[in-house]
Image (cartoon, rainbow, N blue to C red):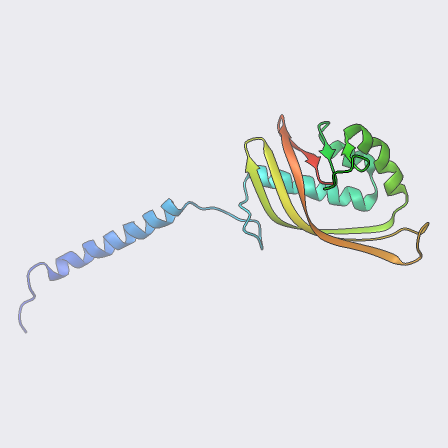
Length: 168
């Protein structure tokens, strides 16, 4: 058997060490970003807080709890309903007046919301989500009603809390 060339095996352990160090560095450098299950939304304190507000909104709608919905909203709440007519605009005082009337007509509410995206810029955020809302309006129809769409809900950080500013 011929002697091995000098350095052949000596370099191998060093190469393995380098490969191991390089792979450890690559994992570290990539940052360990965690995402909400089934989404591409990074999980961090702000996105978690916004997701929690949306879940509280969902349960408040199902319970027809006007006080809980209002508590989730900023006093700067303003929504033009996507139209140029001012008759359907909602601000915080109008929301406090109209929401009890609207929800009092609803029965058997079931709201499903699927979060698609959360964009945060400093102290404002926009959450994009799809929803399916099933409910009954017995005063208007004996049949169950259903609405579905893709919507956006806007938020503003006020102190340590995220509050809804548009999109109910």
